[in-house]
Image (cartoon, rainbow, N blue to C red; front, top):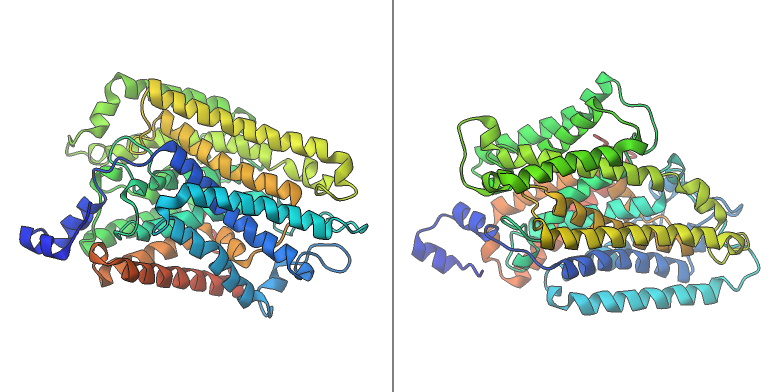
Length: 492
């Protein structure tokens, strides 16, 4: 749908109504295109890391005694920090932005080319550095990794945040394909995956997944209160400045932060061991999908709203069952993945003297994750075809399976890369991963400022790309300052 300022003035339609119509009644893309988009961003990150490994930068990987250097040596006062952050921006963020905007119609070609370049890079790395008789790849795990958040999970969380931050502003411009925006009822748009991916990312590294004791009531309040504060602040600001909003997305008052807070609260109140989270999720999700199939879906997708808060926010309230189930499944998956450092990284990278003896076990783990991802994709396709189509608005069974399949694909790609390549700290990755929710909040603030300062839907391509580049520069720059000051703004 093309919007022009002339047609808006001729029709007497307000700018707010136009912006709301711009993101309404959309039907999404195909699962295949989303799978291609899911694969291309991780390849940009891996290619960036490969470039740093192939080029003379070995001192950035390990210290002279073979141990990983501390992250802070690459942050505060490090001469290479600014250069490396700029290179990260150029080689990761810029191509990601291009693929989601001006190059979207060539995504299959770009994905294929990126995979080929990645394979060539791995081959070159093995030819240049694996030739040495010295074990170049000892146990390279940073201090953060040793806290049971492995490198591939950090890369996954960064990917989720990067695509989300690019999309939340790009969707307001014509340069962003409408098929990538959130769907109205059923369908698979790229942005439909956003909130689900946040839930998955938090579940994978949660206290339950790491077999830690549940937070006490003070901890529960500490974890949920920031989300509630941000949620109410967003509600007040959007209503106060008459900011465009799509009511059918969550409801009249509900928003993304309330969903996160509700999932956190339910998880804290009903705490089950990680080993049983999958079983509980199956029961909850099965019952919820049965309710949808027997008529609840018609109510949730209708324009009918009563005077009560639940009815006014029916999409956000009822979808909690789906998101909570998704979170519990992610906890179970995270419980498996968070135990990998002992069984996975300690075996050494493939190609090292130690890794050659233990590579078989390593690759079986990689194959297991790929097989699990394939199962989720097949189940998502089956449920979408024969039970109910994917619907982010209701967070139904097909949506949960689709989001899990998409996220496991990213995890499997990074897990495969970590089984071959040594860990290498990317400043851009660390500053996003350490302050995930704070980064998203900062991105929302910048998005609001851009939308209030210009008429995004009328912007030509060159203006839109300039605005998006400036937005991303401020986003990275702001979080880079937070990282340089050693701050960690963790809410959940």
